[in-house]
Length: 196
Image 1 (cartoon, rainbow, N blue to C red):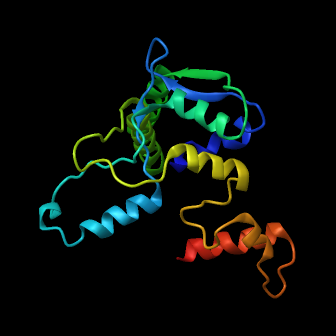
Image 2 (spheres, rainbow, N blue to C red):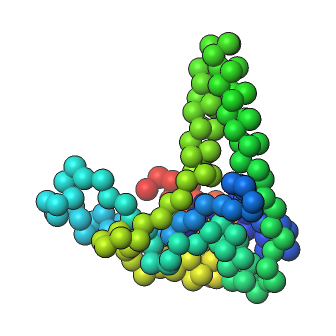
């Protein structure tokens, strides 16, 4: 669910929502799953012998949503009208992948090879549906809309599914020696999360 949040600061200020256009305005679909639901699914299946060495597609409880629908839902969660949608042709990403692969093969630099691999992974996720709708594939109860509403209300740095505290006000009320500003408290909480 957190993947689209990188656009939330712009979108919540009335900015455009960007997506990779696969042609004719089409884009991928997904039924995102929250970290909490995913963690619960993993714990629930640890002792299930049917899951041993098996591939398991899993998605959240929402039906498949296009990136366009997800952007519109994110804006609505913040009480905004539908955003301006900007489609970036997938060919742009294909060009980036091709250029990095060419440079990596000519210059034989590990950093360029790594960049080319990251670009190929990005292209995969930008062009392939991530939909799990079969029996046993849909899991959990955390909806995308509820997640976006919480982020719109609490801010991007507060993640309701992995936060140490249950709300922004709990973070702001947190007292630690030498930590007096809200920004410092958020930094302390962020570093604590990273250590977990």
